[in-house]
Length: 457
Image (tube, rainbow, N blue to C red; front, side, top):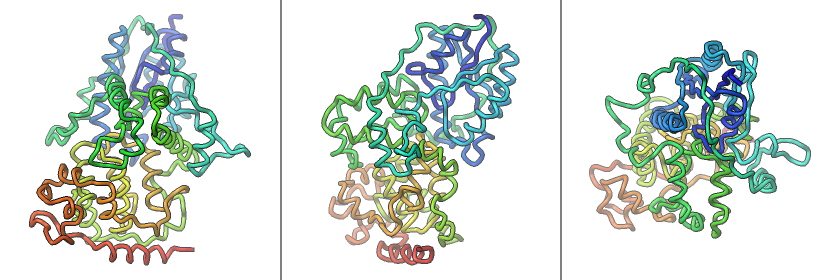
């Protein structure tokens, strides 16, 4: 066939285990395209750290396509309009893409289906979210039964191979230059600490190669911020540089506590299933009574929010996490929970303020995961920790042996002994250049419970 087809890339920036690519190659000459749409997502347009990652991932994808004699066309604008215009230029009537569940992508798919023959393929989850249902055919709202049901569908299908060749059109449409999108920070370049990351499909597989040797010990090391116990695959999975089923088939046979790790991969599927039911998961509490929650606002609350963002709360484990986030675009998972709980319950600040900060600062910012995780911590989610269960950050710091982690990210405290570093103020050795606690733990707990009492019942 000589009529070209479009291949629409989004959060699936890979050539292997890419069913949309395989289908497009069967239909005719393929025109791969990525559209940068900052209008569709509204207040969830890609944040700064994600844009840094996107630049490098798109560049890596274009180079991989060129190795096969193809290339990536770049356009900017409203997705459905841009793709319809490109189809007209190329004479294409069909477009292939991986199915996505973010509300702006669902809207774009609906608009595009009115203009072109849109062929959507599953490929970014262990199983299509709509296929995991209760005995009554209803979607799950709670993770544990969801994971149990998903496990019955495992192992997932084996990944599909990258096509040996990609048929190309006789004439390529015009493309924008990646550098013209200004995705990278310059003045100042706040991403100098991102150098350990390797965005792109090759980097994703190098990352899992590294993790394989540690996967069996995941249960014992994942909660220890001073150790490299997590996989650090999250940004690669978000941008679709590697698929959950590729990860599953690489890791599942490693033994030890690998089942715990696979459950975390399953959590990503769960977040997508929740996203289908609650498209506003990143914007609106799913438990409506929290709409009446007396979150703190005003000058003092804004000062506390700023201190939290800068890692200047006086709680070393929280400050270490927030500084790691700013410097590297990532934060250890256990510390994410501690830092999020501190903002919500110690500072009594609306969880959406934290969601927005993480959205801008995380290289793995994922609408479904970010919203579900923040609402789990806040107690506002459909499956969540109860609000009165208030995490004690100082106790968590000692329990999970965070001394080395604190020394790395809070250098003012580097010379303190382990027994003092988790709470230098209480130990009487707080350095002058490290701040006092914004609020004491007991005082914060009492304030949070008093606020919750106003909406209880």
